[in-house]
Amino acid sequence: MKRITVAMLVALLMSTAHASPLPDYPFVFASGVAEERLAPDECVVSYAISVRDKDSDKAMQVVEKRSAETLALLVKHEVKRTDITASEVDKERVRDRGEQDRLEFLWYETTRRFRFTLLDLEKYASLVDALLKAADVTDVRTEFDRTDRKEIDSRLTTQAVLDARAKADLMAAAAGQRIVRLRAISQRGFENLGIDFGVGNRDTMGRVSGFSLSESLFVPSTIEFQNTVSVIYEVEEKQ
Image 1 (cartoon, rainbow, N blue to C red):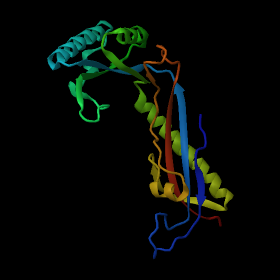
Image 2 (image 1 turned 180 degrees about the horizontal axis):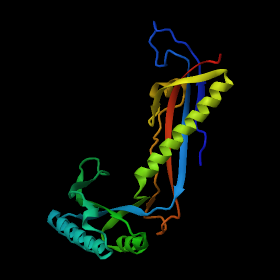
Image 3 (image 1 turned 180 degrees about the vertical axis):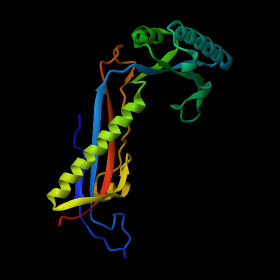
């Protein structure tokens, strides 16, 4: 599915004696979009183990224990150890900021974050449910994706370029112009043109669906992928 986002025709000859963010030749500027909805075949789950205690050593011991427990849970659900990453332990001294005269010490907050890839989505509901019920596990989040993402991005980029060219041809023809050559193409937009014409830069990479722990534990039937390109074509008057 494609949709028109931004397209505009500019046919201006700018004097080279004055600095300008715009090209100094007649041009057409268009953005092309391509998107698909496909069934996911993998997901990336992240979670944190967070412990509060006034005793720093006790907090560390609990974090180590919970880490071992959750790692055993992942292995039980056949998550490969090579698909699991863990951060270093982060320890923060928490004080009562409500006290104006003195910041009274409350506790140490000790946290370690984990991230893993799950390729068998049939195990998703039971695994994440177990994580949510595990002691001291917080901030469980999921991003669904596909293993063939590079191929999808490549296909959508091609379709987005074709979409942009079709819009550019239409606008040029309506203005009595024809496209003579490609001058610029980008997946990040053109900053100066955005400022001048109110287009602005935008994130144009493919999107995947993300869920927090407040969501229901289910695998979505489809997720959206989208690519956008911006192009500048030089034009000349039709003979």
